[in-house]
Every structure is written in C-alpha cells, then in structure tokens.
Length: 440
Ligand code: GAP
Picture (cartoon, helix red, strand yellow):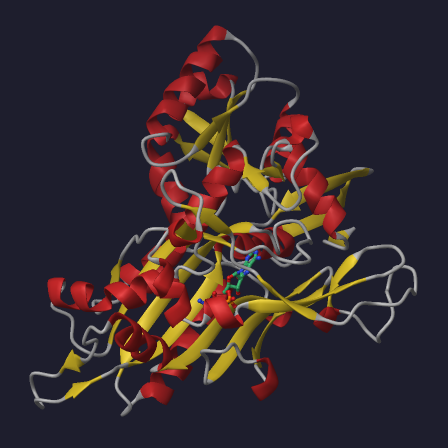
C-alpha cells in the first residue's frame, strides 16, 4: 500500500493503460525507444503546455521558437559536441558486456568480475547523411540538445521580436543521444524530448538571473503537485560540469531507483555565442541602444526533459490504498496534467440515461479531454479512471432525469457531490482552480 516502490509497477500500468510502451514491439522492440498511446500523448501534451505557459507565455521577455533537428555540421564542431560530448566506454573481456566507466564501482566487470578494457571515448551524437551521397562531406548529426538551434538563431529572433536584454528564447523538441546505458523506463532513452529556455543577460546581473531561474523552475514541479520532500536542488561539483558550463544546479527527484536529475539550470557564460561567432565569422554581439555598448551576452539555461518530467509526475502521483478488501490504484495527478479531466457515466445502459450522459459528454468535450464509459459496475468504472488519474467522474442516474442534477465524484477523497447539470462546468473549473495535492 502507499507510494510507488518499484518502477516495474509503473511500467506495467503504463503499458496496460496505453500510456507508454516499448516501440516496435511486434519485432521484439528496440532498446530504449518508447511510444506514447492515447492517454500518454494527452499527458505529454499537458506537460509541454504547462511548461510553455510557465516559461514562455507568463514572461513578456521570453519568446518561443522551433528550430530544425538537423543543423549545419559546423554547429556541433563550434559547440564542442564533436570533441567533448563523449562518455568513457569500457568492455568486459570475458562476458563482452559494455559499461560507462564513470558509472561502475571499481575496475572489474560488475556483471562477471572479468577484466575490463581501457576506457575509450565514445561520442553520443547520432550520425547520418544528407542527400544521396554517403561520404564524409554529407555527414550530419541529429541534435543532442535543442539549445544550439536557439544560439545560432538568437540575433534573428532578437531583432524580429525587438527584444532587449534580459530576454529568453525557449523551445520544445526531440533530441537524440546514443547513450551507452539507457534505462529506467523513459528516464534515459536514445530519442527523447527536451524543453529548453536560454536566457540572455549582461554581466551586471547574471548571478541574479541564474538563481531566479533555479527557483522558478524548482517551484514549477511543486505547483504541479510534486511532493516537495522528494525534490531537491543539487549544485554540480567542478569536476562534473559539462564542457560549456560555469555552474549548474540540477533539480533532482527521489525516484524508486534513487535521487536523479530531472532538469539542469546552467550558467553557460559566453561559451556558445563566442564559439559560434568564431566558427561562423558572423558578429554575434548584442547592441545596447541605451548605453551604445556592443557585447556578447551571458546565457542562463533551464533545460528539462519532457519524458523525464512526465516520469516524475507519474511516479510521484502513484498511490495504492486499501478499499473494501481490494487495492485501489490511484494516480494523484494535478488536474492540469491529468490525461482525462472528467469521465461521464450513465448509471445503466438505458437509452434515456445514455442520451443525457452523451449530451453532457459532448458539452464538456468542448473544453476538456473527456472519457465516456458505460461498461461494468460504477465501482469498476471509477477504478479504471482512478488508475489513470482522472480527477472527476460524473454519473447520470434515474434521478437526473427528474432533477437535472448529476453526481460528481472526486478521485482523491472519493467524496460525491450532487451538482445541477448546468452548473457542472463552473463546478469543475472551481475544483481545478483550487486543487491541492491530496495527502491521505
Ligand atoms: N542543453 C543542456 C542539456 O542538454 P543535459 O543535462 O544534458 O543538458 C538536459 O540535459 C535534460 O534533458 C536532462 O535534465 C533530462 O531531463 C533530459 N535528458 C538528457 N538526456 C536524456 C536522455 N537520454 N533521456 C531522457 N531525457 C534526457
């Protein structure tokens, strides 16, 4: 009973209910690629929408973009990814298993105790070819981070949107990394989505903006219902900083497999813009029309994984409780994230009830993703919705035909309210607006 104890429970639920499951399963699957089903795609859209709203729309000095996955290969030489975006790889001479040297204790194989090869650097970028000729001149990369698209476009966007420092540019999109050891479900995969925002500042207030974005991003998870005691901020030690970063603070979550990074907020200094200015030969300085100064801005970055945030919300929401001798599984997802906001049930499959329930479903579907279910007992139908985190279930019963009212049942408390049908939209709006994370 209680919270999520092992990841397998969540993986099984995600597959059973069509949230997330392995890609290409009929061919035996492909390691670390995942597909999102009908409920998963709704949840994912809600995560991205919540990020877009909080990080871009809520700020009058932050704008959005959507840059291409394949970029000029020189981008990755300038950014340092061709030379530095590597993991140290070791092979076991005995069992032939492969490991990341920095992720294993000691110098023997963690699988069979065999001798390991010397570490060699393995670049994580996926390579492919552009056009019909497969030679070195046509080689391109799938981006390993969305950030570089923002850096190379920053002057075009700044001029078009008439932005003045401090300002930010954010985007959401796929990134690809040929990870040596993917795993823990969607936590580390080779194809994933990122939500990144690059904030351009001057040296007068770079530390202020770094701290501000750390706090802002940390609070985002809490506002969306994650229990604060399972979140922490962890500053990187000098030795673990990425090649571009002057400082970095990770937002970490206590998963069933330990504390791990969900998002990184980094002080990237002038590294990226200076590199791109040198390699492209284009002037990437910002002109301050008030002081008459030209300078390369400092970049503060907030970089989150969509899939990893989604895993955090799912893991944190998972709860089990005893209910009349059975186990009730409930995802206590924030209504803003819940894939289905409201489910509508006719008490029985009688034409008059079905007709009324369908009319209500149609009306609510103009605002929300609504489920309709007429199969099985009401108890069974509640269970099906609890398991995927639907915050409200509405039952149309025989009394409804007389009094034009319905029963609205709350997922967390299981309390039921009788609400007049015409008041249902306002009732739901108010409940969602005032939602607080439920603590049994
Ligand atoms: N632009 C900076 C950057 O990409 P990162 O720490 O390498 O920094 C940022 O990645 C975020 O992207 C991580 O906090 C994580 O949420 C997500 N991420 C990175 N690699 C991932 C992977 N292999 N699978 C899923 N998410 C990943």
